[in-house]
Amino acid sequence: MRSQLQAVLFDLDGTLIDSVADLGRAANAMRVARDLPALPLDVYRPHGGSGARGMLRQAFALQPGQPDYEVFRQEFLDRYEVLMLTSTHVFPEVAVLLESLEASGLPWGIVTNKAERLARPLVAALSLPAPVLIGGDTTPHAKPHPAPLLEAARRLEVAAERCLYVGDDLRDIQAGRAAGMWTAAAAWGYLGDGGDPSTWGADLLLASPAELLKPLGLA
Image 1 (spheres, one colour):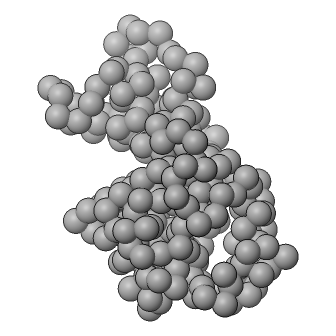
Image 2: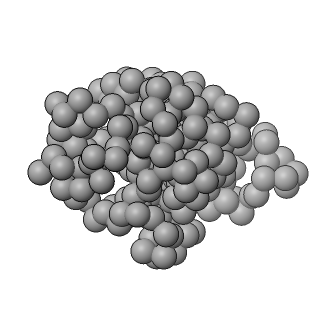
């Protein structure tokens, strides 16, 4: 695989960083403000990759298109922006993986559905110096649409078919395949509602970040 790749792209939440505790805290703050009990953070964990949509569904059974959804979504984002660095951290082995990529000269970037105004200060605070960062509002479409991945490849000046996209959600794999990229399922992440990641059709199934080193020829 290494001989065919010229760049590696990563999802953010659930792939590079573990952010679900802070996402859940923001949702719980909204519940408490409405005299509802806070939910255990484990309730939110599988849905961390879905951001506001996933948190509001768990906290209030709210879905996009329902009355008040946009009002609740904006409140969630405002609360999360204040809390997002409380306990969010980089997953173990990610730092070594990224250092190995940089040492090998293989470019990397981040493609997330998190809005840029949240993603940029977050990756800066966590010392994730991605040469390219594409947010959920960078292009007119978010994943699983391939547009964000194609924009990342364009900015890196690499053909899409020479990129590998690593993500922990079925939508990540769908987006990568639609963009014509190699794909890897990050089984250490949140996994969402996609069930067993071995059924997603990814080219690689990884149990940990370090497992990516061997197929990239870095171990």
